Length: 205
Image (tube, rainbow, N blue to C red; front, side, top):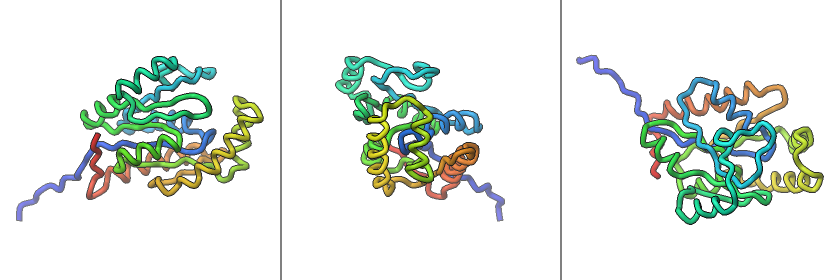
């Protein structure tokens, strides 16, 4: 009998990272950048003003409302949504280029955006980031100190509704206080496990 090597099937992934507002999505992304996996991070376009320490082209592509509308009209956004008075969108070409080159692409979107991508690319990997409770989420948002009391109340009401969309996701990861490293490792483990599937996900875009 010939000793033939067993090849592991492989296909580039689209990893959709979403979750409740204030759960720490950006912090998890920063951890993924350091975890050693060959990932392509797709930068979201937004009309929101930058927060302190945010850098254009790294955390977001910050654009005017007029420029955002041009991207919509040109069909350059895979999905877009109005979130708390600002528009956010996922650049389609950046994802396509990464997948065509055989690289796994990671996008960070809110739950509304994740639901839109689920309809367009159901074979993507959907990961939901959560806190242990809405009380814990409220405390995180208060510490962030970027919302007014009215905005905070709105985000908590929205979070309760977003939890009802949990069924569209493949995985849930809890980002608990003092356990950030564990949350990052769990996301990395999900990606590693997906790369070991006998029948890889086939992403078509």
